[in-house]
Image: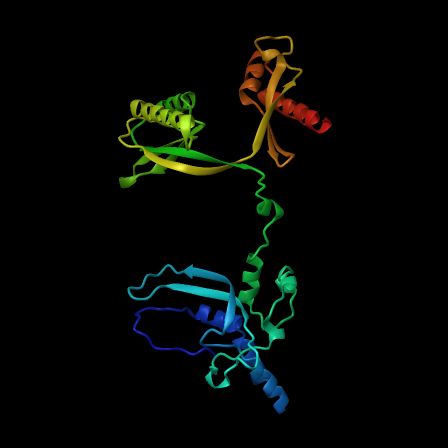
Length: 329
């Protein structure tokens, strides 16, 4: 099996479970079982020896993928990391092979046992019957994905917006005032605002006030963005008790392409105060497919208040009419 060495590190570097998994993943366990049950014939013994796993120095190979993981324990003079390299064997010809310098710890496998052709690399690695491909190689091969046509051509199904996030932790404000501040933020240019309950030092209950606004890079848009940011900062400072606000710039958000359509409902059609029964409906597109249909809440609320019809009934009707209009076209 795998050898062990003494070191100067105090503490456990490998758990018994990890050692057992290493024996299985490297094929040591299978080889030892075969040797234990092998027949007395020399040909069978030679076959088993040729399948012995390589333990020691890494072989000569062309790296194809590298994975690195870190443990949770910290050592003073020892990095607690593991690195796995997946590669293809380099098979030199007879003229370039120096047998005297070949390391006994690094035997070269036969090309047909380890080389994976470009055609086979696109297939599911689990369907391969090569016993020399370990479980680690199988898992890493699954993670190597071919780029899609959309990625190669720069085509995306959504747009990426750059946003700025304002945050303030507040532990001495009432719920009524927080609600008022959120309304003020939305009226002064925020695209979204919300509150999260938190626990601060000394076990004090508090809230995090969050506010999102658009970020701009250049020109007049940049000036407008800075103006909006300044207005929102002033709203928070003037209307809350916080002494500081965190600012996180250029936060990326993936957003679907959107458009809005107007549908006629049967509720309040003859009532101008009830918007004549008209409701705006937001549509979200993934490529050319509508994946989100949402009736405007405020419009449904006005109609509900004027007609007495439950808001959810109006919203469901508007959503249904929008769907009929979309799929009819």
